[in-house]
Image 1 (cartoon, one colour):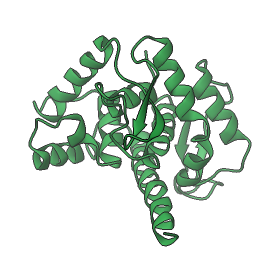
Image 2 (cartoon, rainbow, N blue to C red):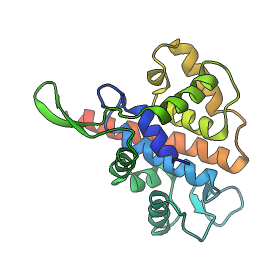
Image 3 (cartoon, helix red, strand yellow):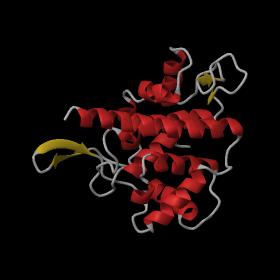
Image 4 (cartoon, helix red, strand yellow):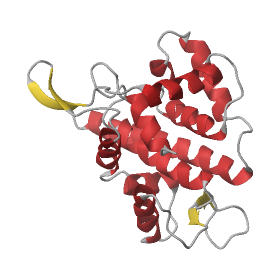
Length: 225
């Protein structure tokens, strides 16, 4: 099984141009959010609840063992280095080098290739156009069935939709759909009863943290212009 972060990155890269469909601030943050949700779905991490020694809402590791996957194991190690932290702080901590690690994965799997292009026709930039879209096509079919077709989504599909919604990218993944209807359905899925209480808290915390992590740097950049 692929990581949520791998599937999410495939969806957020334009197949033709190889460029991300979200801005450079949003991409690494939402990938970090995907890693946190993966750990939550696996029961490895969750926000603390009422009556715990850790302050409510801070992320708590529930497993002593490291995940088998290298990206998840690195994330757990970084979380373990610090005291329990807020989700937005965890996302900041996890996003360092994550984009590159996930890109390396999907290139190695033959799904995209690394290429060169010019930004505004002048500045050199790196792009990742699609090579083999078999996996992504299956992924998009599952998402389309849920978002546009109204089918009941699996927990992983719901998690992906919630992450896309957090960076306002659901309609970009389905440009042929009615934007308002797509966004409404994405919100319904993200807020739906597809996960247990612990994962539900994690979804809400991660989505809110991604939003904060994306908006704050944008405001800061705007203030210095």
